[in-house]
Image (cartoon, rainbow, N blue to C red; front, side, top):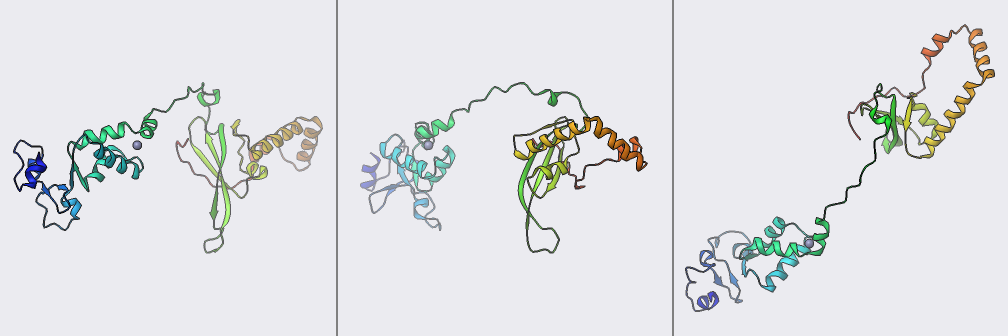
Length: 256
Ligand SMILES: [Zn+2]
């Protein structure tokens, strides 16, 4: 009806949905929005977008194409992109219908399953001093300079100790992911939780060997004799023993 009126150089009816758009037919016979932007520097398609009907299969194809070309864009993004070239009557409901019928979008809209988590381990929920019970892991590699003006980078890693009670994090720099480097960073907490990394299992085996050695009476006697010969008292020995490591502490708060 509107096309007939416009092709006869007549105005559209005042009760028409297009009456407010001041429509016109261009030289190719396409119905476009007239508007008041004739002298604007905007692109022709943006100044005079093509008018499309609401529930037409061609309109659905156009909406679908824009939606797919923009990687299944959302409702608002699809509408914004369409409005750069087209004026769809009641575009919100038309675009919503197309996106609602899109199979891929439907699949991604589905709520993800939530796994029922098991009970927390005792070490996570019982009172303990800071870093008495820790989780250990490695991060990296990081490229670092050993000196300030050094040009070459060397590869380094970080050992993370996460306190299971306070969630505080202690970081230690190590050069390799080896058992020896991990042992060098240890401050001997009561419980260490980790994955099955070879350096962690290696540390566990070495600490077990050390524990067995300390339990042997012969070894205890030889240590006592050595300390007596050097005039080292047992209390002094216990308080002065430190694991060799790098004095480099950063507390980061909760980080899990
Ligand atoms: Zn989609």
